[in-house]
Length: 232
Image (cartoon, rainbow, N blue to C red; front, side):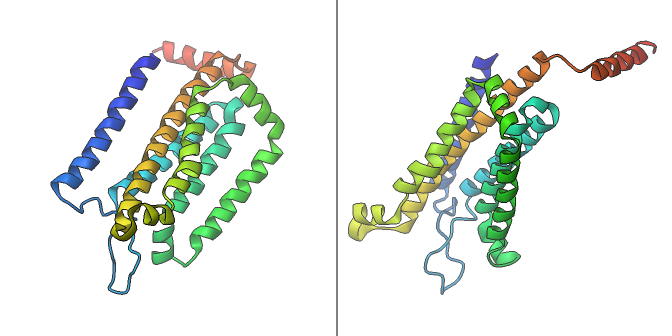
């Protein structure tokens, strides 16, 4: 029942957004969008913010879902693996502060280069299978929602969250936390769309996999399993 899923998406997004806003209203500064870790820290960080933590959780969930699709829907594997790799790349980018601070400086750049190279190599090697998988899937509401999220994350938020823009708008009243708040909340809605798109894509991929004829070996294996279960 797609309409029920979309209703649940609406309720979930509305509840999380309401909870975040109420948290800040009840205890100003609790969102931790701009905290200074030392006296010499001029720029501050928002990496400890619940907003950014939710973003990281969403990316991790998207990666797990794409891994499930790759495992259980073989014909969609050429799409699921690159998207799962992209989710991992974005997750590493979101965790760059912690990787630099607690492990090694610029480690996140090395990890992104490795994962990105593997994704590009896989996509190029399986480009024909990727075209076939897209042909079976398209038009796809899930991929459309993921594309919408990508527009927000990689185009809109980069322009609207540009610091000189807010310095120009606010003038002498400029505060960096305002720019960070706008940027992080816009990113959050982009990740919400990415999450919904991933879920819808997984439902569609599962439906395609169930509709496809199964190989003879799999049919026989399922029949033997069913017969053995029926004896007891």
